[in-house]
Amino acid sequence: MAERKEVVLMMFSKKDTESAILSTGRKVLKGEIVDADGRISNCRKCGRKLTVENLGRILPGSIDLYCDNPICFNEFSVKLV
Amino acid sequence: MPRVSELIKKLAVTLGFDIEGHLVNYEPHKDLSKTGGVHVKQGKGSVTNIVMLDSRGTRELLKSGNLREAIQMTPSEVGGMTREDLAGYDFLALLAQEDNRELLKRLQSIISHDDFVALSIAATIRKYEIHSQGAKAVELRNRLRQHFKERGNRIYVFFASGMLEEFMGPTLAWIEFSGTISDRMKALELWNACLDHMDYAIYVNRLMTDDEIVHGLRQRFRIDNVPVVLLFGRTVPIIEKIGRAIKEFQTIESEYQVDAFSYGVTRKEYRLGDHDSVVCIVNKFADGGAAIPSQSEDDGEDGAVEE
Image (tube, rainbow over all chains, first blue to last red; front, side, top):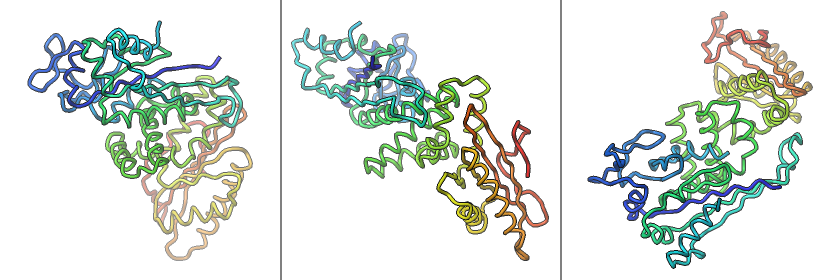
């Protein structure tokens, strides 16, 4: 039996970033992303402060936010090997 | 449990929105039985289906409110969101990982997480190069160097030159088949030894002659003027060839009357199952015998022989 894996990535445009953030239960305050409990969100990998401008990906885990640095995506993608 | 793409389709249907034309599918296929130098795994192949939903489709779904259930990860499926301008990179990174899955999988349990991430980025850079996107490849390579310093760059060179696959491939395949913890440790030593001096490395294969090795060494020491050169290869005849070439090189160099250098060789042999590998670090000493500092002085590991 062949091993099958499915990876689905939903693309969002820059202007839809805010709605994408809201769909995860977080909020946007003055361009910065804050968790439901009011803490400022950081990139899951590099710890950079996340804003509407630099949010790159929303990936599974605990619905984690990643910045737009490609290295942060690779930090996640290696889990799929 | 429904697949993520099915989940999204279902969600779209309930919203009265036809998502069919908005999903883009890619199915990289790899036949496991035909990869690697040793047949260790006879499988019927693995398929990774990468599905991308375009931004218009996502917008419609976002209007519905909550997409949380689609962002999930199980061993067989992963769902996430990515910004439109980064999706190309993400797709390529996943594809590069898929293409080199066997190699990556074998190395995953051996090398450090940072090295592993750097290797996955190196595979993506190679993918950019294959697709003739030089500017993006350079940009990513700079990022790799910035983030993982010189070691990241060496990992890229090791991977992109094909030396990693050729030199370590069979050994890694053997480790996957019946490797013990000490074999994994030896493989890690081998990996580290190669990376320490990857800048001026000579990989010796079956077709390379003794003269070519000597020429390579002389060029690096005399023209490039480097203090350390790494020589590595596998299988017994190649190990013998390396030994002969080093002796010949030292003889030629000893005939210099002016501008003479002496050379020290640290030789490490590794035996993993039926696979023999050798890593020789040739150090150039300044006239009079003072050692030119090298990055990876031996700390008395097993199998290290000073010549």
